[in-house]
Image 1 (cartoon, rainbow, N blue to C red):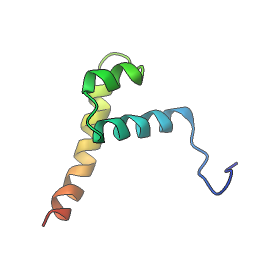
Image 2: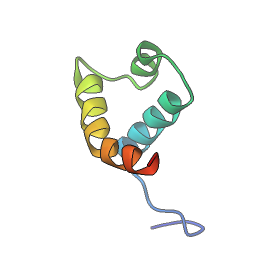
Image 3: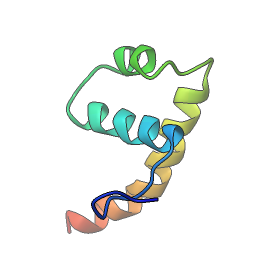
Image 4: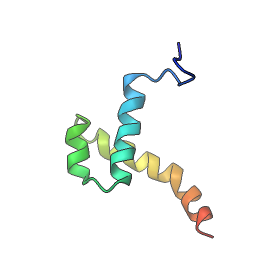
Length: 63
């Protein structure tokens, strides 16, 4: 159930959101990887998936 009109995020959603937040603020990849307790290469895989999704948006915003 959402509290104060906020979505009911689970732990994994918060981990992804936090990862993107820190990366956008310039935190080094290796630091974010450790902070998020990412296992193996899952951090790199997730990051690449988000870049592929966001790339078309970022290029259209700069035009």
